[in-house]
Image (cartoon, rainbow, N blue to C red; front, side):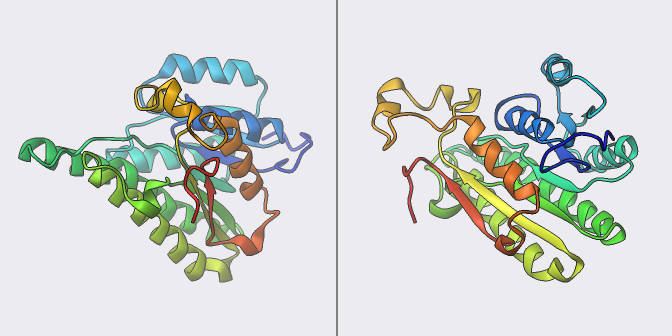
Length: 252
């Protein structure tokens, strides 16, 4: 990695899952801007990932591909990230999807739960496990996981599995923070509401956005800046915390 880069993340290697678009791509940009080496994970959108790598340029960006619904592929993603950087200092569990689990169709219900748990819970849990083992050998590290407003309040009737998976992510984060602080391993979550990504395009109309307290859907940059701050180590004693990023649409 290029240790000559300046900034609060200089010398740190950060794996960002689901980084080819949306919050993940914004996070990769901020980490790179702040001096970090970023491993851009993508599942299938190779073109977008390569475009992002070309945009960032230099030696402080690497690409790794893998289907995180496959436990073996998830393990390989972590191993490749460590290989290309030598070590990983921060894991950003961003990859996820708002997958429906409609209650009136048993097949769709079962499929929805299987896919939600695989991508939104099991994959970040497995990566967190790999990260903890790695961090113990390298003097510590941090995990920042993207949860959701749904983690607190649940989701709608067609997305019960999504809300449940995202709620479990907060329990995972708190448990890691409490269990591994003695190893200088920090764990945080961020819980966005509607963010201006393609995931929200069909769910939030312009009229609905205007009704939000700030009159707009949260930009991905706001989430990315928060993730980068937590990744920098400047808030060690906030470990275990969840930062809500909803533009006051959901306040607790």
